Amino acid sequence: MTTDCDFLVVGHGIAGATLAYVLRERGYQVLVYDPGQENSASNVAAGLMNPVAGKRFALTWQAAELLPFATAFYRELEQRYQQSFFTETPILKIFGSIEEQNAILARSADNPWGDFVAALDTTDPGLPGVHAPFGGAWLRHGGHVAVRELLASMAAEGTRDGWLRREAFDWSQLAFGPTGAEYAGQVRARHVICCEGAAAVRNPYFGWLPLTPNQGEVLDVECLGLSPEQVLNRGAYVVPMGAGQFRVGATYRWPPFADGPTAVGREELAARLTVVTDLPFAVTGQRAGVRPAVRDRRPLLGPHPTVPALSFCGGYGSKGVMLAPRMAVLLADFLLNQTELWPEASLQRYKALQPVGVH
Image (cartoon, rainbow, N blue to C red; front, side):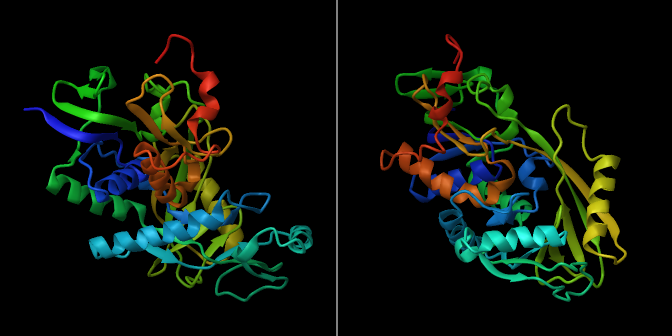
């Protein structure tokens, strides 16, 4: 028996899950393929939404639009599934030295961060267990998403209602025709969307895109007495998970990748945590995943240059939870002929990289 759908989505990480949700909410028939890997980047991530980040302490791209959009989106999902997924919480960027403090204070005169920096402390804020002798910058409108739990709830619905198939997708079984695509003699779709994350580097249609995957590891730790009222950030993020539990991350490693968590990653993250707190802690878990990063740190959205019924959605790197909701709506609007893609997010900016004669 052949299944007909409007959109066939390959991948149910944060990119594919949000896009499939948006399309279904608009009344379209969506079928999703995903093998359900425990070590996918989305399942490993702490789900941090941070408006100001990086060594340069720069405002995240499109933060003023992405953050409120994502917040509203995750609140909507909380209502749908009657679960709590998003925690809005202050983020304290701890100054590592008087020089760093002075540099950020000097930049603050131009207010480059808009409304996202609530205050700049020049002395220790006195948080329980936190080592911050030079103070720090307090960020607002950020927080963290329980990505694993969110995806599990969406997947449970998909399995129950039949729109999610827990199996690997074989791209060699996909054929395109004048009215769309056919897959393995089982599925007919008007349009196919690749949301495979870092695995897209091996995709026969999109392997030419400049994805530069990197591996990240996170630790789950128990640290009783450490302030749970905010996310801490100094060389690593420390995200409160409740009841004295925290998630610490993340490492960045370029290929070749280790097969799963490493002792080196564990030592690196533990060392970073000791910079933030003098309190004893116990490691209760460790995970590793591979992020789908792009060289210019912008998403990749849009149709394949030569296959009209095929599109790509991804390249979110370490900012998946913040990017995914707005990018899902942006791509859905484009596919339904309602708006144009943002030029900075369109994969057409890399069209010249597609080899001649290749998909």
